[in-house]
Length: 567
Figure (cartoon, rainbow, N blue to C red):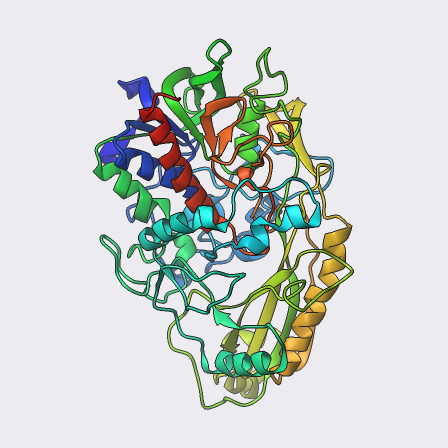
């Protein structure tokens, strides 16, 4: 695929049908859909190149200098990176804040970024769930924020579309609040998870334990091999066993002959023509040379992730829109959401000693939301939470917390330990105008541009919800026969869940939203935002599949409007 990558000073064309800002999950989908519909497309990525297979480091932990562990330097320098995401293999994947510019914090925030081709698509957790009308109708029913301008029926065919291409494995469950999809065969639950499923579902109304729906193949797709159960997805997969820009959407877009990719291209602003009330292109800084360029296009798709997409819009201020393109409603940068987690419980499951595990399944179980659903009504808070978890046979690594020394200790840890089960809750964060980001004019990055400042935190609803998130994990572990149950609550700062959303929300009224129901910026209808910035509420399930569906739907609309000469 190296033939599709261009350097800025070598780019022959400065005018395209469409420009895509960002190359992560949303940007990759935008490029694929636009090119397959015949448009000449320029994809801009602020980070460096990162090629499928060629640039993956497939060495095992034991072959590495630090045996897979982060160095003290990396741990200290990358304190904003969640501990389970920071290891020797991924340390260089995350943004170097000393160069890119540390964001400022009115309130504590964690912003986990990966500036390279593919963005975080090679690093994501791959959990892929459809939203339902429980989510799309929630704001209207609760009288919170603004109503979504779409419903599940509007997105259902696009969920079908992206699932078939991405390859989502999962089980068909018939749940109205977690709709089934176009799934490949599910990964299996292990023996202990099957037992827990039976116990939980028999003892609790409206609760289900299912295998996670994950963007890992259980059957091959063209150019991709099914998952090898190595559980090393964060390194990039040589087999294409999971969905990423590199393995999936970028090759498809490149195959059309309609794609150009420019890396090290920091999009400074959208260029806006106040006479036509349209964008004419984008201004770009070559981060290697500090030179500036303007690329022209009929369409602009901003898919730079929720916070950076808002940054691009804010930094596109003009005399018409002094607070940024899309700021006419006063909502640009507001309503920051995430999923709050880092809370749950673990326990030991007695018995099952004759059973072990084969392979390293890159997935776990999922328990869909049950709070404030059906007959379950809770007065302390609105919305709800789900659980991700797994049962596993403990191994030699348990020696780090066991007491002992000498031959007896070595003999003990040389044998499989007991089964354990852990559950981690993921809770919905309500949209709140007070939770906002803005440009900090007093602090500049390496290129002299203002950095983002974060002024957002969990509110009373989320704090009240966390009590149940912990207690219900205990209740379900007890129902599963667990002993030695240990709870944990590591606290949560927004951003910690890496599911940033809401900074340029969709809505029905330009006075109260940044985007309309087709993901168009109200103030410039040929500009589309289809990543997490567009979300009007956050649900409690992983949002990436919804970004894919929204992007494919918006591209289809944009191209049809372009054909009609409406854009």
